Image 1: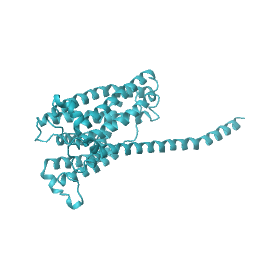
Image 2 (image 1 turned 60 degrees about the vertical axis):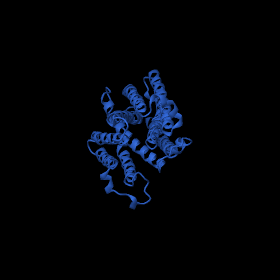
Image 3 (image 1 turned 135 degrees about the horizontal axis):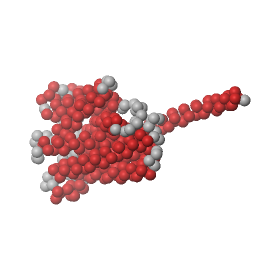
Image 4 (image 1 turned 45 degrees about the vertical axis):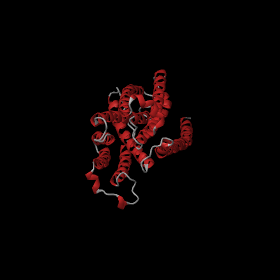
Amino acid sequence: MNLTRRTAATTEAGSEGPERRTGLTGRGIWRAVVMLVLVAVGALIPLLGPRMALDGTGEAGAPGAGGIALLRTVLLAALCVPAGELFVALLVRRVPGAPGQTPRSWAPWAAGAGLLASLGLASVVATGNLVPDSPADIDVGGLYETRDGKLALLEVNAFAAAGLLALSRRPAAQALPLAAVVVAEALRAHPTTDYHDPLVGTALTVVHLTCAALWAGGLPHVLRTLRTRAWRSSGPGTALLGLYARVAVVLLAAVTATGVWSTLRRMPPGTVLDQLTETAYGRALFAKVLLVAGVAVLALWARLRLRRASDDPLDACAPARAEVVVLGAVVAVSALLTALPLPIRW
């Protein structure tokens, strides 16, 4: 009798196993398709954004602004991914009874994408901020003679170093080259000919970009961590998501404060409302503000759902996944801002 029951149970398990494996594979393929669609849609923001933002403003866009904005989108996303992983790793250490299982790192792939994007941007700088028609137009040696060229080379080397460190036994050492990318982007955005003190603008951008990278890169890695078997439906999973939510509030406050301060430095208070609709930079900035507000609403929704179902952190993942999508749009619009003419000082 026992043998018969064991045989029947084995048969049922064997018949359900392939279906389960097929279902998991199907869900994995579906997620990959959805991810590709979202990436493709997100790429339209930097590609078509300059033309839409400049329409009717009378401003002239830089040559190849769409391609440059796309490269900067990839660069910023490549910065967010490893920064978020390092950030979540620190949060995990503060969770009592945290499981040792963690999802596979995306940092090496992100560093590779960042390296390609930074090489593309460096080639533009090497041709006098013009899109090169052929490799012969690129003056690699000229990169060492200009400030922008040196910053572009710094980003190339930083992503190369970050990729190697991500594959090493000390992936936490990526923090140094990632910090170099942040500083290089801040210095590039505030040249020495800036109409205000460039050091103040650089400092604001460093804080703004650092907090934004931790915020935008941390949430996807938290959700990936919660999907692992050890973290799913567990007390540590709820604690991790709650800890991230509390820190994210501080990051959002810092991003908002530095963003408002930087805006007022570039747009006098009396002209802000007009420039938000009449200049390309203002329009893109207004779109970014709306997206950040949407992210804040989704974050609050996820926090409320987490409190109502504290025993299962996956209940809060639905609004959190939507938050990740909107954060991706924020990154794309932020990159778009770097490819548009600076606001007018009236």
